[in-house]
Each structure stands twice: as C-alpha cells, then as structure tokens.
Image 1 (cartoon, helix red, strand yellow):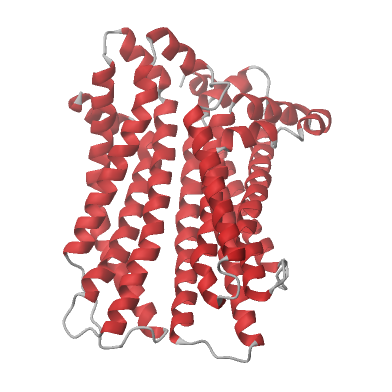
Image 2 (cartoon, rainbow, N blue to C red; image 1 turned 180 degrees about the vertical axis):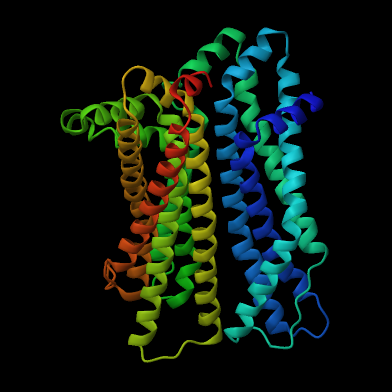
Length: 452
C-alpha cells in the first residue's frame, strides 16, 4: 500500500496540493514562532526579553497550531472525498479497509515529511523577521540574536507530522468504514446530512465562544487591555464553529436567494441553485477560509482599535506591555490573512479543478462556456456573502463584549471602513481563484473534459 500511495502521489499531484500547502505553511509558522523559544534560551538574554519571546511563541504559536490542524483536516477530507470513486473501485477488487487506511496514511506521511523538509529555510527566515519586528517595536533589546535550534525543529517537525497523521486517521475512518455499495453511492452523491460529530463540534466551539464572551463582559470588565486575553479568543472559536457547520450554512442560508436566481439568473442562475443544493459539502470546504479570514481579522482589528482609542481617551501613552499586545494582535492578523488567503485560493483551485468533468458534461448538454463562467461567478458570490455574513457574526463575539468591558458601551466608535476592506479582499480572492481556474478548465474540449 505504501508503493500504491507513492504512485498515487505521483500521478495525482494536483489533488494533494491543497493538503501539502496547508502542511508546509503550518510548519513554517510553527517553526518561526517556536524559534522564539530557542532565542529566549540564548546567552545574555534578560528576563524581560525572555518573557516577551516566550509569550510570542506560546500565544501566537498556539493559535497557529489550531488553525493548521483545522486546515489540514479540511483539505485532507476534501482530497479523500474527491477520490470516492477510486476508493470504491479499490474495495470492489478486494482492498480491505485496513489497506486503504495504510494507503491514506502513507500518502499523508510522505506529504508531511516533504512539507517539513521544505519548511526549514522559510521557518528560519520567518523567525528572523519576527525577531526584527520585536526589536523595531522596542519590545526586545537590539543585542538579542536569533537562534533557530532544537525547539523550532522538534516542534515544527513533530507537531506538523502529528497533526497531519491525526487528520489522516480521522479522514480515513469514514471512507474506509463504508461497504462497497455504500462507497459507490457516496462517490456519485453527497451525503444529505452532516455528520453528528461535525455538528456537535460546531456547537461546542460556538458555546465556548459564547462562554468567553460572557467572561469578557463580566469578569474582565474594567480590567483595561487585559480583557484582550479572553476577548481575542472568542472570534477564533466562533469562526471555527461556524466553519464546522458549513454544510448547514450553505444549504440553509446560501439557499435563500434560490428563487430570485432561478427567476432572473437564467441558465447560470438555475445551475447555481442546483449546485448549492447538491454540492453543499464541497462548497463548505471553500466557505471555511472565508469565515476564518473575515471573523478573526475583523474581530482582532476592531478590538485593537477600541483599545487604542480607550488609551488615547485616558490621555495615556502605551506602555511596553500594551505595545507587546498590539504587536501580537497585528502578527495574528498578518498570520491569519496570509494563511487564510492562501488556503482560500488553494481550496477554490482544488475544488474548481476537480469540476472539469462537470463543466464538460454541462457543455455537452447545451451550456455555453459563458454560462458556465456565469455559474461559477454566482457561486463565488454566494460563498462570499455567506462567509462574510457568518465571519461578521463571529467577530461580534469579540467586538461587543470587549467594547463593553473596555468602554462601558456596546458598540465601538470605529467606522465600517476596516470591515469593508476585509470584505473586498475576501471577494477579490474568491472571485479571482474561482474564475481563473474555471477559465483554464474550459480550455479543455468538452468531450475530453467529460471523460475525466
């Protein structure tokens, strides 16, 4: 099965790009932040500098781990889901569930090893850039030298490998547990219901976000910038919760404009409505990074703006701790923007490329290339609106309780400019990735594409 896994990777490289990039980016982020632990252990580093470096490594590095684990699991699930027919055929010729699990684990392990190996140099450069940022903002002394050592290598390699293999185990369980007939049916039609584990997971994350929001508004009320310790987490937990509930959101919320689309959208509108109804799980994979990007970026930026305004209103200057918190927040935003943007593009490219056969069959039944592109455009618009909507709701778990805890008011004084900029970036990335991939797919002759 290892030999089969290697041949599968070689001949199906495109299908594994999304998972590989998730592992690679994750390893780079973890190594970059973990190198702060190596740097803190260097000679001549003061206690104050050690505290700053350890905080940067533990807080931001911890969130990196959560986002990486979530992204790897999502992309692996998408890759295995797209290979449902292949899995069914392997079962029909005698492959056992254990053999299929070993094949999936073998593919994932090879990807993880390659990703970790390629992540070392970017991780080293990222750690140096991070330390330079801390020095430029006067949070770390200029004489501190960057060290990339055992902590960065062990955590980057170990965490990435464990996260990848763990995600592969979770992904393989459902696919290998089905019978041959069930696998064949699963390959031709999406499940009508979301799994109970995913539903429970989404609800648990939302409840955790709600709990932290209450703690922020009550226990942390009047604690100044310290309220960020709980408020900053809430939009992350809420975003993950909504992302897990993606299939339900696509069917329920994204299906609301079905009637106007079918009535006024012509053939493209009709195709869009059918895809929203029939491909909810695949569309939910693309919805995930939009929600994460919108929710975490909006929540963190507005939280920082509220805190900065409160400090200015008090006539105070930011102390070293507040500067450190502000830098942490902007590093989180930079990390989330880069990671979510790449994952959004990556996921959309993977899902749209996989639909070449669907596009070919649509063209053979009378749809024009223009109608197919219009369908992809409308789908991207539906995804963007849905992702931005629930990302905005997730951000409120941070913004409202923190504003109350910090200023005794519910709504921040900040205008909508920041949110509109975030929405614009999400829309541009979604549209560009989907349409560019669809245009390339439509260059293939319809008969050839339908046979894929």
